[in-house]
Image (cartoon, rainbow, N blue to C red; front, side, top):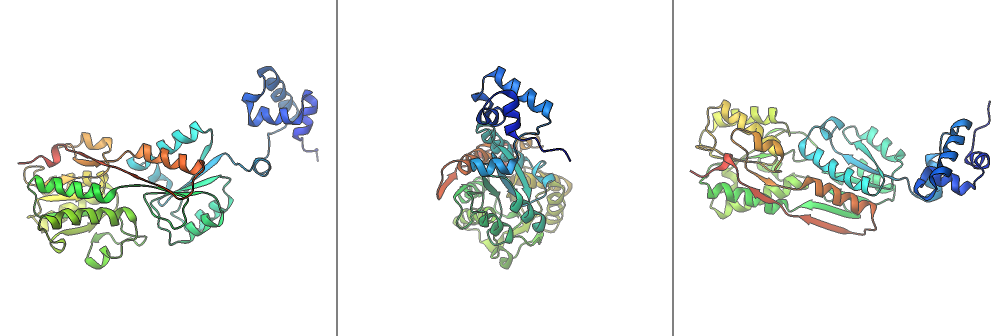
Length: 348
């Protein structure tokens, strides 16, 4: 068996110190171009593969990577418009700080825990996940910075959330101002247990996801101030897929033709609501107002264009990554939203 080539062997063959050879791989800007090229050429000739990741971590205390935990599968992370924008923001900050990103799906808890335990990362971001599960416990056992996005996790080093209560209250008030009086709320998944369909008072009381809890609170606040009882509002829990919400809304409108205002907790759900309303023979916005939440680009291209509550998901991701990779301790940021009025909520 041939002897493993070490960094020291490369340094001797290139006529430089071991520190200079190390910098040629890890901090190339500190080494003159001609010296760096000589070191890399010698390394290639000797068959040296580069510094061992774990050895570098032991030496520097840094892995040069950020772990990002999503509650859904990786296909969702790269297809959902808000998740894509969030990853763009995280990636932007990682690029600025010259670190990599490792994305971990929490869909399979056993696999996720194994990935977390073995992840060579300096910090973790957790998006939209509750703190009452084994995955969060596995992260906390790593004793590394944890920043949560759109969720509350006890003991997190930092938190970045939207003012979801205010955004939802603004959405409901807008439809009230547009003349809507008979409402339906299309909710995102309320907790880890899937239960899509009608959302009764017991289910609403069992909400564990912060986003759903805050948005429901905001909707209800504005509706109650307008004299609309929460029990008179239809609540439906939807999968965050337009095809799913379209089916749910078509059936709902055929059963409840009096509905004239729909508040959807995401633009993806709201876009499906537009399709469902069309299939049920309803005219948006003439006899049905529809309001989304997120302000994604696709909402500009629907027929009619979708009114929404806009959030800056790119900045949310960038800020969370900046916090995770910086010197933080209990920092919390609440980001504001804004009202986007388009064709789906035009007043009569």
